[in-house]
Image 1: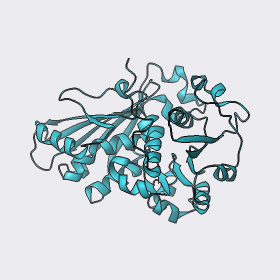
Image 2 (image 1 turned 90 degrees about the vertical axis):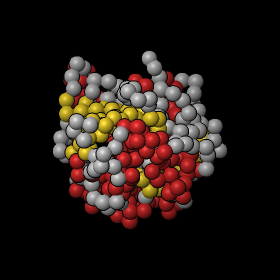
Image 3 (image 1 turned 180 degrees about the horizontal axis):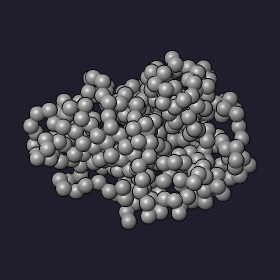
Image 4 (image 1 turned 90 degrees about the horizontal axis):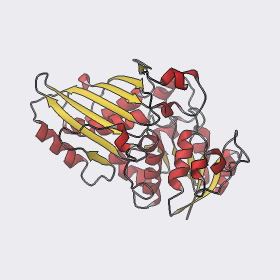
Length: 346
């Protein structure tokens, strides 16, 4: 049994980690930290866990957690993970950070977009970007994994086959993405209130969302050249889910059937990425609560563009499910352990 600690267990991503790990046969939860709910049972904070989790929330220092755990998940706001991860490396504890602190190979990019000083540029440069479908072998060997953001996961999986095979002009990529309210976290804020979100949809972070450079970093690696994208996220009045629709110009004529085969080949054997049948476009409902990514595409012959749509659950494949997928790879378990399940529908 692998001893696992979660720092920041009572936010939405932390609670989703606990939910998934509660059915993992190879782990023991040895530390669940929470300042606000210290002393309360995790199942009292999230009653859905009743009967599955019998662990208390504790106000522990990171050092306390690292002394108990062999693997630690960090589910904290940006700016708080670097020192914990650095100390974990010193103590021989593996780290999966669900925040943004270690996602950028160049920490100066992080500092520019997040307006926070980065305390360990070398650690950031050596952390492995935790998208298994792209970096699986590096994740297996990693001590520190930077779990991707939710929007980047949906976008990168949607565009990776086309970029890798050189079918699209990277300079023409436009991304229209939409997310449920849980993506904003559990902290109370006006924009997340029911009366603000219900019967409404709005763009935000236009031409400046913090996930933009993360998307560009990984797409550039796939394309073998610098990629800059137009990325506009929107808030949907749903609890969970991300739908990203991407547009790009083809650099040479291609049929839809040809491109569908490119996707089949690229994702052959992948347990969680599914190309839907021709004409069946992804719905967020179909991946709700699952670690799956549904993709479809078509060629617009009139404009010479390809259109790709990608749907994930922002809390599962977009955060905690992917973190457990990375955990399984790092620890040598079957990759789909505790994750092999369809979405909840209806």
